[in-house]
Image (cartoon, rainbow, N blue to C red; front, side):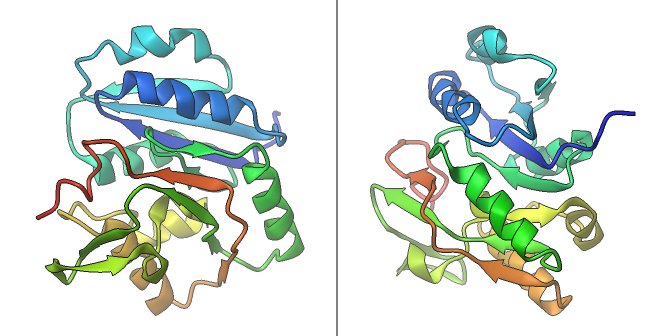
Length: 207
């Protein structure tokens, strides 16, 4: 029987085939190799599958669904995953080469932790709308960034995953984790690159 993979990387995408190529290049360049990737194409019409077909393999899997939104797509990705820990890579972002290796070391050094987060380098505007009052802007240092989450898979499922809300599903999930006394650890190693320069960034489209 095949050993369980350590990481499942969930990648959701919608009409971002060219940016997705950058994300995938950063994934296959990881120094840590004990991972699988689950790509959920959330209804793209830009020939995403054709663009990335050379990346698809026993490690990188592609699934298409009708457009349902990012939260639903991420939950779908988790349902197809088989890893011990699940994490995320947004299609317009990318990893530094040591991203997965650094997180694996932290998780192995802290075996009781169920959620690791943090360690993001931001490109572009560092301010986002406050989920409680979108008219106000807050610095991303005051936010939790869901793409940086490393969840024990069973704990993510136990919490019910991401809820389909207009904005702030990652913060809502984090709040649920805190309320449920999930064992949480934060890192400041900035190996997740959060690129906020794309015109269709969710936070750019919030009013």
